[in-house]
Amino acid sequence: MNDKPIIAVGDLVWDVLVKPDGILLPGGDTTGQIQLAPGGSAANVATWVARAGMPAGFVGAVGQDVFGDLITKDLAGEGVQLHLHRTAARDTGVILAMIDRAGQRSMVTNQGADFQLLPADLPEPALRSARHVHITAWSLFTDPPRAAAIRAAQLAHEVGATVSFDPASYQMIRELGRDRFRRVITGLPVDILFPNRDEGEALTAEREPAAIAHELRDMFPGALIALKLDRDGCYVAANGHAGHYPTSDTKVVDTTGAGDAFNGAFLARYLASGDPGAAAVFANRIGGWVVARDGARPPADDELRATLGA
Figure 1 (cartoon, one colour):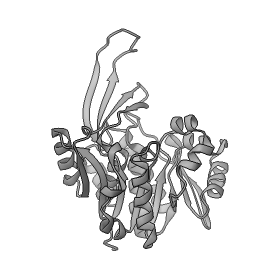
Figure 2: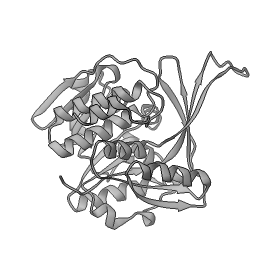
Figure 3: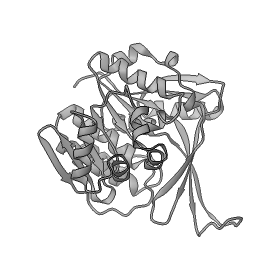
């Protein structure tokens, strides 16, 4: 097995998961479930790469607060090699995820320490020794950390590593507009693209998965497109390959982090085997396991261990 790591660059934050028992009216009160869990899109991807048995690394910034200490220890415990910048400028980031009765989540992200990563903070030797670098658009919507994220991808790409990119938020894409979003990611090399259906529609104005993938391959020439379709599985398009991969029916409890789990699982399996179909089937199974549980990184159980060993 290639021992060069798959490195995710971006956010390592705490997720505050809120499930109201009823409708929360303006100025009103209700009961519900509130959970604090480790998260961050890039950190989630690194975790699932490691859980899938591939060398994993993470590059990002956290605060010098106690929450930064705790979340750093948690990610290291997942077997991820850490390259962290600890900053006193801001506390460790927090994301509020409101989860409805169908398990769908809406998020509010504070601009914590993860938004303070600068190009000077990058571990250049580690990035130049990576096999692959993953970037999420949460690192690109503002600068910093945009310049650092793009530079990290370029450093790895210059020495032959591949780069993946998750557009991350259809709402942010729509607010920016497609043309401005394209300008924002100028300079980012993309070999693998991980949009979900809403992000694909926002980027292409197409609705059918095959049409979305076709337009995205024109937008990102030569890239493999892994289009996430929620309950409908995924659609994968690459050189000489195009196909829809359905997923099994799963009771949805919480969709937080499911797309990140898909990304990490897909990268681990695809970079190990070179088979996009096998990677899609594996990633669907991991994503399905995640949505049936609370949080982006639920503790492993026998079902997960069986899936990872398959």
